[in-house]
Amino acid sequence: MAQMFYDSDADLSVIQGRVVAVIGYGSQGHAHALSLRDSGVDVRVGLREGSKSWAKAEAEGLRVVSPAQAVEEANLIMVLAPDQVQRHLYKESIEPHLVAGDALFFAHGFNIRFGYVTPPPGVDVCMVAPKGPGHLVRREYSEGRGVPVIVAVEKDETGNAWPLALSYAKAIGGLRAGGIKTTFTEETETDLFGEQAVLCGGTSALVTAGFEVLTEAGYQPEVAYFECLHELKLIVDLMYEGGIAKQRWSVSDTAEFGDYVSGPRVIDASVKQRMKDVLADIQSGAFAKRFIDDQDAGAPEFKALRAKGEQHPIEATGRKLRGLMSWVKSHDDDYVEGTAA
Ligand code: NDP
Ligand code: MG
Ligand code: MG
Image (tube, rainbow, N blue to C red):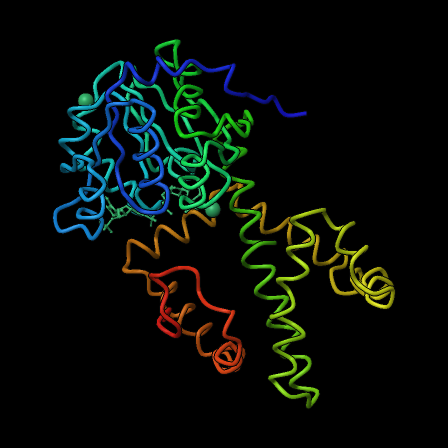
């Protein structure tokens, strides 16, 4: 079993004795900065000139300065900019201002695990990664609860990295729910595998393939959309509440029997073998290199794949059908239908 940490395992005064810079003010950044501040921590936000987030952070009463100034002032730097910009941000604005005794924090291990960021000797390297989106992290904190976090220490140069990481986790409410001890390697590799093989890649491909099989067999796309995409939410909600067992308990006996006999025909040993191939590409760094090389070249592969996905007939069908369902609407104010490409 994993080692767990709770509020009683951490001392809030450790983080209250530090000067913290939160770099980035997006999903995670806003949640960390505001909850740290409300926990009595001296926090400033580091954002680039002209940042869209600047006014939002100031409107909450936070002090906003350039990333370089934030790092200079602080002795604990939490890096919450997008993973693909962290390497450049680190070289330009973080590394020149790090001194021995500082701590560098992350919410995802990508850049440390794959060697894109290599902090100097004397600097602690820690991770506090909430297992939920930033808006939920902030809401739970504000209501006196918390979202579980995973906590890791990659480099304990001062000998105080663990008490510091746990104190940070407590200050954002994570230890009210519970902290799980992990490593940068485990967090990074399992996070990438989960999103590629199951959550994002696997599910998107499964839904799309099901929609294609039905429409190619002559069934109407509107009906195929409901059967293969729309109803997925019901199934996922049941799994979220009570695991696969609750989903099987809730559906009809016909559906449950079909689950047992047909699921393994679709997701068979060959699929599991290809999942292992995906994991091997993550572990070797091949996936990370492909992503970062493409990003550095202006993301041609990423943009082409995004445009291709957007053009799939399932999207046009979905836009039309969602218009009929007044209760179905996007919960993300920044997302605009059909603009992903
Ligand atoms: P977002 O994309 O939501 O936010 C990014 C923020 O960084 C924005 O405020 C953006 O501001 C700022 N930013 C972008 N480029 C720069 C730059 N060059 N210099 C300074 N600031 C910059 O990121 P997330 O919160 O989703 O992700 C942050 C980290 O948290 C990542 O490591 C991610 O893996 C991790 N994480 C994310 C989770 C999530 O649910 N989203 C969950 C757990 C971990 P602007 O563009 O206005 O300048
Ligand atoms: Mg400093
Ligand atoms: Mg991820």
